[in-house]
Image 1 (spheres, rainbow, N blue to C red):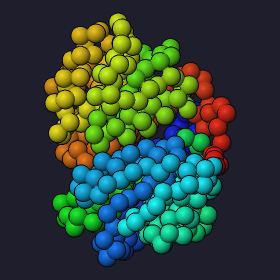
Image 2: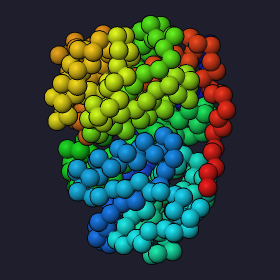
Image 3: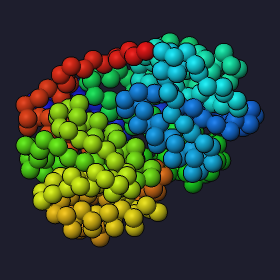
Length: 348
């Protein structure tokens, strides 16, 4: 039974994981925020791979917009293969990894520490090599993640990043929104059976695009990754702007496009983009909390109202996780053991 798989169970554990993270890691987050301010950090360098890299994309938008911090994603081969790391000044080197074991990610923090820079790790393995190179370790509090596809560790990474942003901003309203997230995710999980039904339509889908803009650029990447690793679908992520610069030529009658479109500043542009897809006769799956936007698609997937745009990537990925889980199941793929993958991937 699908409900007996690790993937199903871990997706449904997310409310309690998020609650634990909020309850247990707030002190470490505040200490890290205070040290960032004390050292007058003006740059964040993120080292990550896979789903953790997608969490890093979220950090680029959130820490950039709310905290006005330039955030870059590290190029680990400069630290390992080429051994020509960049010079770092007033930098927080932030490693994000559920296992904390990949040598190239560890190497980035080790070099940052050698250069006297502040280091921190978001990891589900507090005794890992990555944690050993970090001045501050935020434990993701996810418990053991046994399914190969990351779900609960990804959303806990997003929450840890959002908590750091709120702490740096000293914003009580942001902090209050964070406290509501576990209940929001619980409500979303109630759509499990509905998503199982709509997925039947896509049993034979072999290729699609996943579109997000702004904060949900990260969601597009994460949902596309889950479609690839769990369902073996050729799923390509794009921002709506990038997609119009060439890849839109792919779109023909019935071509599937999954669009993440929550309320916020990016929504008007996304609505214009959806209209372009409609004009080209694409088949559009829309994830949104806006009724007018949902009505523009063929398949509406409602998101909860009242979640601010800066926090929307966390609830937005949950129906995507359910979608990919059920699609893998109806294709008779093992959702816990995607072919050719292992839980800890060590790259150099």
